[in-house]
Length: 131
Ligand code: B12
Image (tube, rainbow, N blue to C red):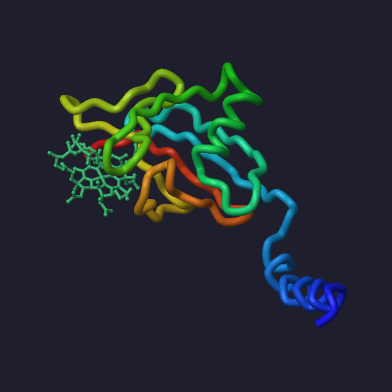
């Protein structure tokens, strides 16, 4: 087969794959709430690239709002980053508190911030609560 024809055929075969992966970023909303002391709820919006993880959205929000959204994570050898604190409020083993990760309105995420891939226009809630 002539090289030009092969090239054309390959391009045609790749087309559905390329079309299935949108190149536009999508919006994610992050809500920070405290179920224990009822401090004011914060809401941030950002955009992330196709199938980016939640941690990427958090870093982007922190970069845009360094005084309003800060966080710390601790690397777990098995599950990746554990969200330890948000805006200086840290979970505690003695008080049995932690930052719960929810997909709005109240579905707990089944993985941590380093693994979770938000859907387009999704709202993720960081809820400081007890266990
Ligand atoms: C107890 C527990 C917790 C406790 C841990 C605190 C404590 N002092 O006990 C609390 C309630 C805080 C917790 C929270 C979460 N957990 Co949890 N947790 C467990 C559980 C039931 C047992 C862990 C354990 O004690 N192992 C025994 C000890 C000796 O081993 P260890 O390595 O020291 O255990 C530590 C780690 O497991 C770590 N840890 C616990 N959960 C998570 C989650 C993530 C993402 C990370 C990075 C670390 C981590 O805390 C443990 C104590 O220090 C496991 C399931 C299981 N049966 O293993 C789920 C499990 C580890 N948790 C899980 C999840 C998803 C979460 C949350 C993301 C849930 C949510 N929607 O909010 C949050 C973490 C949010 C955040 N801030 O990052 C998943 C992780 C799956 C994955 N691939 O990421 C598991 C496997 C359960 C599941 N759904 O399948 N968890």
